[in-house]
Structures are given as structure tokens and as C-alpha cells.
Image (cartoon, rainbow, N blue to C red; front, side):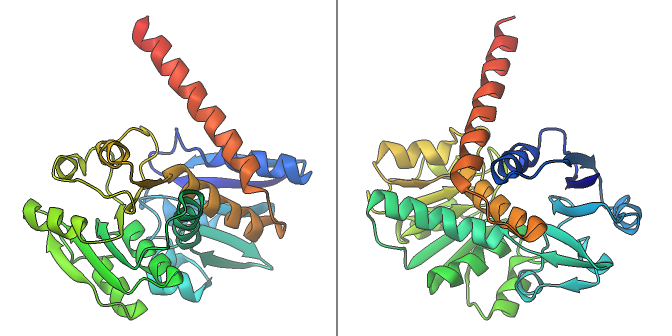
Length: 289
């Protein structure tokens, strides 16, 4: 049986199986199995070394996006520049790594701008300085954005956005997260705010913000959907690009790489929203019990 899967840790609640299975069903692909595989950095070499001939591909999430790179035979130039791989595809005995997060971020922003009738942004503040922030830098290049600032607690270290910026030829302004006033001023002066921070980490900034109607937010956190940043933008009537759209579009590119066929993102989006609603209902029922 041909199989694919998502690897990382923790992986129990990953939504990748939902969107991949929906895409396969709509494409008429049967007899494939999509697995969740718990895997940390320590277990990664054995897992990658044990990939069998039935594997159609892997979706890679944290903490494995950088750690997987030395274990592969070939890496797409975009993934090399970003410094992170989120997709592994075996082909003729060769393991190749790709980064579809870049497409996911750019496509989510394009969709939000098109639906809201606002022009594509020309300036951006990115919150965070690790793998997803590096993917965001590459996505901004696809969108033609030339003014980029990054706010983070720490900019150095393995997989940092500074190294990615150098490889991508992007000049960024560094803003220390500890200076919340400076971060807020930077946020007020850009067209687009991208938060790559974990759930709750960006909450302190939200109370400083008064977005305009033409500013755009992409918060990669989609569960919980109602983040403090999102609430601040919605109160002001600003534009919100969905974190779920990033997940859908990057997943659609993964399906294309793994199957050679182009899925319908709307089918994947519908399946994702249904699953999130189901989980919310179950969570609510559990809270009442």
C-alpha cells in the first residue's frame, strides 16, 4: 500500500491528514494511507533512513524542518535558501526536500487581498525569527515586498531568519521584542503584519495596535482561531488573511509534489473547516461535562 504521512513532535493533533485525504478523495486516488508519525530530532535519522518503496512523501513539521535537511539527497533551491524543508518526496531512490510554506504564505495573503479589494502590501513586519519567519521572507519576495522588518526576542542561532535573509538577498530591520513600543510603531507603519509566533506569544502586542482598514494580518496560528492579534484587526475593520489558508495552500502544493496531480484547495479548505468545527464542538462538550 502506498502511504504518506506527517512527521514531527507533538503530532497527535496535526490537521495534515484531514486536508491530504480530502484532496486524494476528490482526485479519485484510492488505496493510499496517510499517517501521523511522532518523531523528534533524535529519532529522525532512523525514520528517514527507513523510508520504504511504498512511501509517497512526508509532510515535515517542527522540530524537524531544519534537522531533516542533512539527511536528504537533494534539496530544492528555494528550500535551501529558506533553510527549512517541510516536504520530502522519494523518487527513484532519491529523497528530495522542498518548502511549500513559502507558497502557502504568499497564496494566503494574495487571497485575502483579492477578497477584500486592497492592493498587495509593499511593507511588512514579521514577528518571530525561526523557520516559518524565514519562509515568510521568501514569500514576501514572491509578493514583491521590499520593506521588511523583523521583531524577535533573539535573531541568531541555527535556522535563524538572519541567515535566511542573507541567502535570499533581503535586507531586514531588526527590532527587539523587548522594546514593545518600537514593535508597535513598526506595526503601525507597515501594510502587512505576519506573526509566526506560537499561540499566545503575540498577545502583548495586540493592545498597542490600532490597525487601519487597509492593513493586512496573517497570524499563522489557526487553532485557536480567535487570537488577540486577530481581534485587534477585526475591531478596526482591517484585513485578516487566514492561517488556515496558509495550511491549505501549502498542503495543496505538497499533494502536487507527492501525486503529480493538482488538487482543489476549496475541497481541502472545506474539510479543514469541518474538522476544526468538530473539534470545537467536542472541546465545548468536554468543558460542560
